[in-house]
Length: 122
Length: 467
Image (cartoon, rainbow over all chains, first blue to last red; front, side):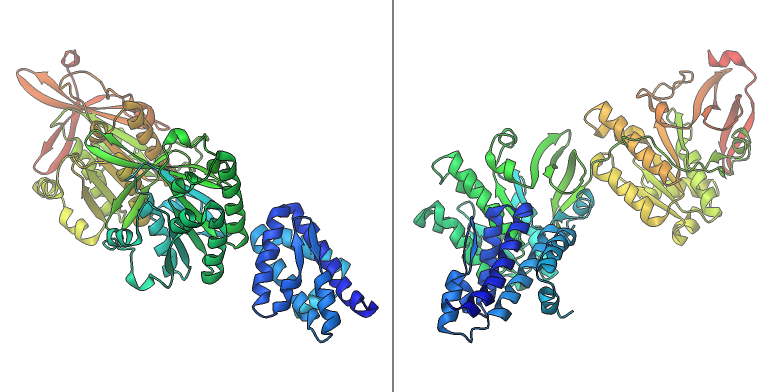
């Protein structure tokens, strides 16, 4: 895998793992898995490639996604991932209340300053 | 917290605003207890507010039968069927493909329709399809997780008996449990609902009466004595009867917001004293309600007219309202709640129940009767409504007996009306036994109900008349 692709995907994989860990604290891994399944289904209506995301109760991996990106470098992964993360946090906010969701959002913001804010148009 | 408003009369009040959103609720009860109507009423109310429901039957009732039975209720609407209320058959999938496929089918239906509410009727049937308790428990756990992740508020309907509610695993997993049941009480076949559990919100415990009628379900919250010490502002104003001698005996009238018991034998004029109290209020622009279990409004109007009281004017102007409820039809659970509702809505300042002896005859046990009166009394005091309860003393000549149910404990003031014998004639005397927080005349005074009204006469001069 090229270093550029690894970097592009690695960035989001870390973000997703951080999100997974942070929300597991509140939802439990079983429900986090279901939530990822739901968001994958929703985002797949626009970006079919999101189905390449691998997940189970042990965590989340973007290995297949990276492989597809090797074949098709034009894949709009940035937009797709940001849609995924935004949607995930939106649902989380409704399930857990905005206070808890904000905590998770803050963690992600600290980790990757700017990405989430930009996706929300701030 | 986001909530699902049920829209059922008084249920959201009991639930502190509604059912917590995305919760899994079990609606349990015997066949015929009203479970299906209960959930259908909720989903149709929500459909009118734009929410979508998925109603999955198993084998308990076909869709055709259900729709046929529901179409006479006011909440039902053909227009919402198939668009906002979608029916599906989960039972067939479970029977043909096995219980393990049930969740996949459900998820597929959710993705297709994106409902806000899912109902499974009946979940008890599903439990029988699983080989053991452990696998069924795992199914319910997964079901609960799937539904909440999809932001769905769920109702699992089941024919459970009360003893099963503490034993079966689905009740441990459920966030909310509504148990519906019926029982025969005196003349009435009554339906009750208890909320046994509701995670994430406070709610009113105990049994709440409900009725199934043309509108669907109507709930009447349990009247409950307040657990905490009653705190309310004590008003120092007085409410007069407009009966000259009596108001003097009370040092200016009844203290505002207090409860007065007028106890007396039949024919002593309890009703007239109470009615005069409301008419005096009406004259001063204060709204009053006379709740009669003894005489219909027309009869009361006639009597008042004979005494020269302007009852018709006050009735027409809305200053006075007479509500007659036949004691045969009296249902304390329902009427106690309605009384308070009416008082709140109409901003009533003076209120009469004539007589609370009729309450007693309709309640199963005397403790429940006292609890009701205590609860009503507390609510009325909090609202500063000056109230009169009349009570029948069945012993015509017995001295100073108030009532057999120790009602004096719940009242602030007690006025006694009784007969005395005097030289082969019967006279009426009145005494104030108690006036909490106020001085009062301790003497016994003779009175008469004359064509021009009630006259308080002199002190009773023959002590031996009370023997």
